[in-house]
Length: 412
Image (cartoon, rainbow, N blue to C red; front, side, top):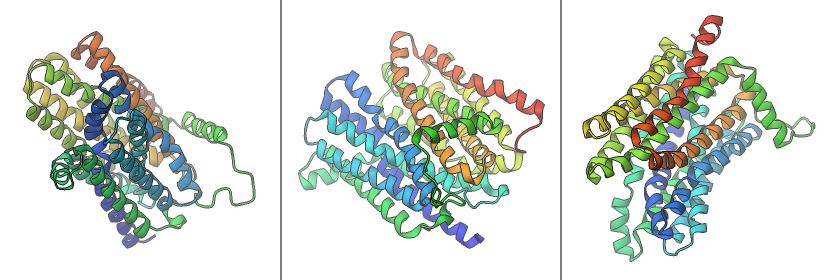
């Protein structure tokens, strides 16, 4: 594939990411409020809040398998279309009191998160080794737009609800469905639909041999990771960083609210955190290409440790909490981009797509578990204790770094 075609794929993925993440971004913000409104029960609402994250974990592997059997276009179209259906269900559920519909809608919207994650690996399918991190980080970076705009979709929704005479939540998810629908049409109409979208993978199973069962595929994925030190190190590093980020970020607004911070300060803190997560991703990708993925993973881990230290030592200081969340986002960005690039580089084209789906599902499952556990931990202890416990998720990555260096294996 020539440079022009690769550039076209990147821009199609980027444009799709903008609209798709706007729609998906409504789930953790408006979805939280809707869940609380419908259930009038914090315990049940907490379960509903994690439904979209579990949905992302649930759809990760099937979408990757679909990409392997057909094309990236088919898989991404399916993911964004499923999320669109989820948003439509939520727009309908907002006018009633059905907890089941709310949970179902959020679960289906998780497919959009899985599609957004898969898109970063789609960007690396045809990238040369020297530009793989840059291509991946570019797709992560454009997600900044949607990730910042999505949680604020309530502002235009308020005007729409007033003019249409509907509820705020119904209008918000109607707008989310529109954005997700546009993402679906963009990827279906503009992304190549042949095996060029997932090299070496389309047509798998077409040789007349029986297709392996789901259990066999999961076993093959596990063996691929277990027998590949670089892929295992990348996966563990990414998982640990993601669990730390999710657990601390989830409870920071609650903690700041308990400390008397207003909604404006809390909102600004989360916005700065999101900018830290995505705004510097091109720099992280370029640094990973130039300095090596492991170097940037270690940098990200160090920033995450510093973020946790700030939050744990200054829980009553608003400036300390804001700085902590910014560093938490930047540290996550460094680790996420570098570990994703290292993971992609460590696998052959034949196994990369399915393995990436397994990694995304594992990451989302870990995030959902971390989000649920963080509330119970903070309720039983304190925010500083929660931060210190979360830091334990970084230990496996640090332990694995030295053996990798001693054996001289790995990327640059």
